[in-house]
Structures are given as structure tokens and as C-alpha cells.
Image 1 (cartoon, rainbow, N blue to C red):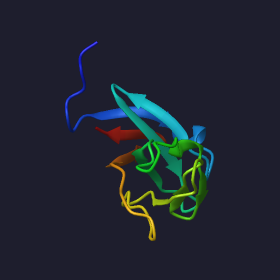
Image 2 (cartoon, rainbow, N blue to C red; image 1 turned 45 degrees about the vertical axis):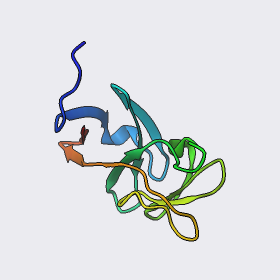
Image 3 (tube, rainbow, N blue to C red; image 1 turned 90 degrees about the vertical axis):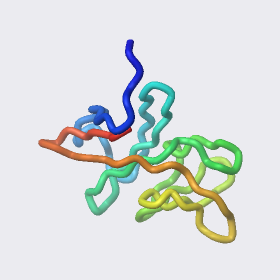
Image 4 (tube, rainbow, N blue to C red; image 1 turned 135 degrees about the vertical axis):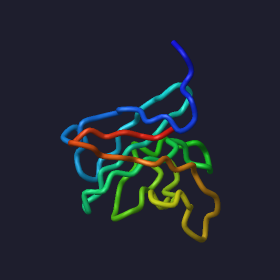
Length: 107
């Protein structure tokens, strides 16, 4: 299989497959991505690895526009990827597009 090119849009799910406030992990090439459908209806995608101890963010608890790492409860903004104070760090974010109820991530 050919490697993905940067800026490529990849189909990852149907909107109906994403329960509200429950994370889903998707893997595209070497990118492990946590996908979230928020109560606002927006879909966000971030790196599925907490910067603290690499906890799987897709398994975290979602509240508003934040996910709490299941290992040590670090609070991460799923829109910006920023870890909330007093902790420090960030995770990569990925652009998401929803077209005709199909969810795409831009790698």
C-alpha cells in the first residue's frame, strides 16, 4: 500500500457510527487518532496519545470540548490540542470534514 500524502483527505467513519461524547480510535498509516463527536455536533480529531504518559485519549471521558486522559486525568482541549493548566503540553490536531454524513480526516 502506498504511503499517504500530506494534505490527503481520508474517510474514517459515518457520522452515525460516532456516539456523542465517546471517543473512537482510528489508525491511518502511522497516525493513531482519537475521534470525538461533541454535544455541539462538531467532530474533532486529535493525536491519540497524552503527552504525559501516552495514555489513549480515545478512552478518556469527554466533557464539553475537553477529554480527560484515562491514566492521570490530564484535561486536553480537543479543538486546540492544548493541555489545560496546571499541566503543560499539547497534542496534534487534525482537520475534520463531514460531507453527507461521512467523516473525513485530513492527514
